[in-house]
Image 1: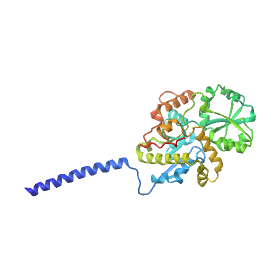
Image 2: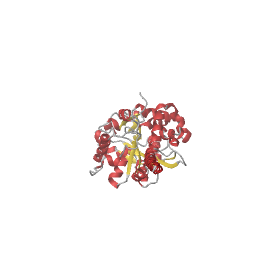
Image 3: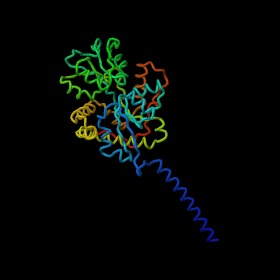
Length: 349
């Protein structure tokens, strides 16, 4: 009888151990990230040239390697093309202007979704020579502006023009290949140029004369999000751990560049030698000083944060500019579920 009781106790204990062990393994699997084995191969498609520091810092400082990721950076040819390619699953993650993401979802049902912000505010500006006599946005009437068919600046041009009091029918838009925009402006073939704020110092250096600009974010309600990090909905649903690890490495790279701005030029040049370190540094400082990459929102909720209110505002701006039908809601455009439980905050000012 005694032996029988002992046997019963042993069996019961083993059952409890197995049950607890099973729960423990499942919980650990759900909470952890892949840290062992061969790194996952990931492709990250940009919307333009590989000249920004965040993703190179994530590679250089091993932040993606810590997440057991081997990330390959691919240059892009515009936000429209990047959104299309991610929608076709030709890369795992993309970086593009959120306006083009919204348009793609509304018009073509492209199944992509933002998982983190890249720019807290739009970087779009209209740049022109100081000697041009242009003093206010309405002075662009009767002038010509060079851009590309896939430019996010072109996407939001109708909204900017309306907010700034410009009759856009009186402005000539010269649509050219992305590789020609800068040279056409510098050679004086057009009066103005749609460009990112961070690129103004580089263009000014090549132009050899002072430039000025009108920033989209300073007119109307265009204080919207700029570029975002996004993925196909299938990637998000089928491999959430991969998304979480990619975002974690990206945010660490983001934080590092904000903490060590003096290093960004050399980091970029190490991986993309065609870039000028001094120009990269000036561009990064311009973004930092103008609250393009950080904001009060980021300081409160962490880098990469996207709010429902501001995304709803962004959707409204795009819908109004392009007469989109109702149906695009913030939850169809973004998610914050892959941001870390403990936010990665920007350095204090």
